[in-house]
Length: 139
Figure 1 (cartoon, helix red, strand yellow):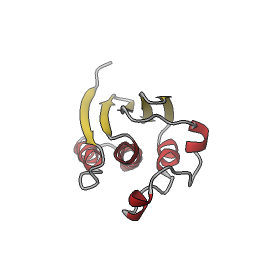
Figure 2: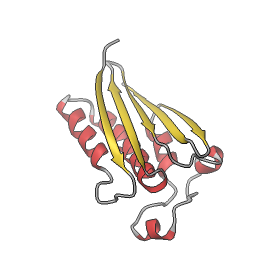
Figure 3: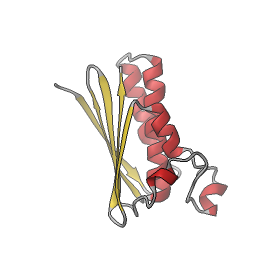
Figure 4: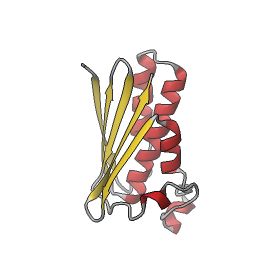
């Protein structure tokens, strides 16, 4: 099945550019005239993942494939990994430092919002190697 593919580089620790990938994808989805709910869910999911990459993983790469029946988003980083996925999925749990919190980030809603916004989510993580989050939103 053919898809439309987009790739976004995410710079780590650069909060001035945090959110660029999700904004660009949102614009592309609007240009494709996708339903507003799909655009909203996709934008939230990718934004939360993008911010996590900036805060915790020194950046990474986001690949998005748009199929006729779904959007597949793969966010890959080479950060420290997630020691306890179950704990990280709890609303309010965060390992963000005080500096990040003072910038208004790190509330512990990233992964829960990613899960809530997507129809499928899979997290593959290895300590000191990195994390790959795969999310799908079905039409």
